[in-house]
Length: 483
Ligand SMILES: *Cc1c(COP(=O)(O)O)cnc(C)c1O
Image (cartoon, rainbow, N blue to C red):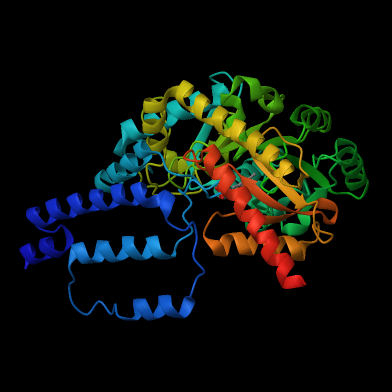
């Protein structure tokens, strides 16, 4: 019986050898064929459910067939975010070292709740936290942080730490214990994970005060100041302002320095949401767009976005070395204790049992080095510029201002070229054609645009031409349908 269990869970040695070999062959084949396969397919829910209905798990199955099934069906149905013509939402083409890291992590299954269960893994993450903190302009010992599932958890961590900082009584008595209602500020272009975090913290979404943006879609600092003094006059308790460094829709970077000046004067925690745009610190000629980010109390950065590690790898960073412990530590009778000056990750994180998220970042960085990443990021920035030029030449108008490789554009050639309906039709046509993946974005002041972001490190100038050609075909097809 014992051997039987081993047989179905661990598989026998020969079966394992075949499985690993097939798996690697299939992955290599996927990456080889990727540029030629459609970027996306129209989903068919009924067909997918019918396909899965044959799995009733009533008897053991064949491992090779099972793996083959999954790879083939994912290949047939998913939006291929690793594709060179995926111009999408910051989802990476994964680094090879990241894939290797996730494989090691799955196999050795390190537990990152307690330091003593995995000293090396804990210290690798600490080392990375310090390295990233320094790149953002901080110095040890005033750097701390924690790896998170992704940016949403990292933003949630930021809201929690800022609450604990502003209201030390929050830790024990929660919001119930506060004499005044806390409120926080973010621009209307900021990420909605902050709204979710506010709900999860018990603040509610009404505690999130959206601040107007200027003509460049950056948080308007004058409006922020006015809003804070109004709120104080109404008896509310402002505690946090979020500056976004690289908005999701248009890649716009708030003026972190000016926002920091207000936060400083008003005694508010400054959080920089640099999930995607934070990568600008790794490229010397882009560094200035993040000027002032070192004044932030906390920063989040997603390594699974522009550093291209497999999803997900959010990093929460802070220059307040005690705040994570103050926010998350709990004494237990069953967790092993920490050693000397080490910390137990579970006392620093929303999570308890935790996967070794940092390894894919570590191995990718060991192999690429900062210079390797710098070159890749720089090339993507150049491709972004080139895309803007090609689009203008083809009669599209670029409507966002950013030095990051994200282009929002409308159609100058069509009288409906700025309407959401028209832009959606163009985007749908392009996506359904399988030639490229783009989307529609809605910006402040009722503006809409098509959105294309250089997301994959595999993208080349030829892929940009393919996108512009697909857009031209979409334009003709939509025009024909309208007449
Ligand atoms: C992607 C993103 C988030 C959310 O991060 P996830 O990794 O998707 O959870 C938050 N803020 C910004 C600016 C983002 O781009």
